[in-house]
Image (cartoon, rainbow, N blue to C red; front, side, top):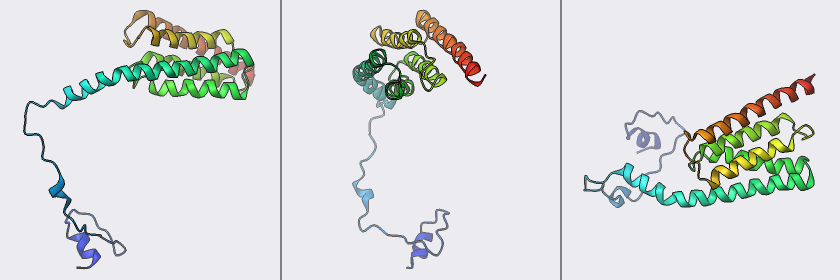
Length: 181
């Protein structure tokens, strides 16, 4: 059987064309596959939730470590000033947290870090960035992890996130106007 004939033997609707080469396996691996669980009492959702609960402790430890990196990056900007190197380290850490905090059960930390990234984007050279506002973002993220503020309905955390986002938006708009002038 030619390669095109072998390809068409699958009868799956794919047209491989004249240049296709089909390599038939020498061993039928279907015999190696495990059968599905016989028990109907297995609940895959419950099993996944149990696995996530076990991983939850690790998530908290990972997030605490990342918050430590954010704090260190921020402290470096305080000690050495805002320059390309210190801002890059701060931005990268905040950006990573923004993207991954929700996955690990801390969506509000992700929002705070997103706001911090927005703030840093407003003044790429760092000349116009208010150190106090940067500090407030870092301290808010640290507090949420320390207090295990995972619930997005936490009224205090929601207000804090909203206020930081509002102040950052207003600040970024002012910087943009003065810069583009």
